[in-house]
Length: 161
Image (tube, rainbow, N blue to C red; front, side):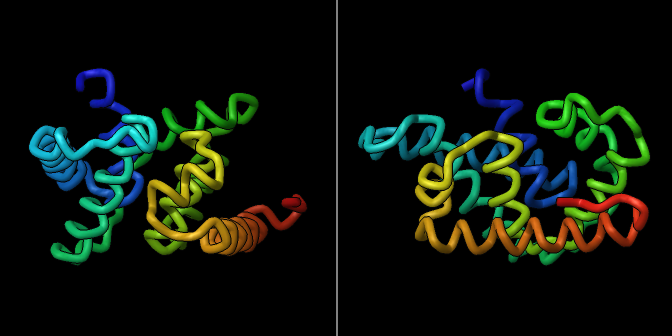
């Protein structure tokens, strides 16, 4: 389980956007994984199964707490963005990207995170989130549109394609 600790924490953090809540949710995820280990059927990879539990637990806890998250993601965002945007080194741009993710719904943020940060396929993402591939494609399209709109507002001299 230690191999998944950071992955789950950062994944959950991208959804709940609060470090304390991410700690709590991550612990809940591992408790659920441990308690339900016998129910793992092997229809998907173990990591996909764990991410699905993380997704469901995050959304449940987010709706329970109704915390609208802000703050404190700069360090995490810099770490995550470096993973998929190695050529982007400007801190201002990284902060802008982080701010644009705040405009996404939790579902859109989750889809974007799974596809572009964790590198999951549309099929894997649909399995993790327990919805159709068409829904994933639509949510990703909407997320990218919102990101473009906000980046265009912040950087009007650059065209985001």
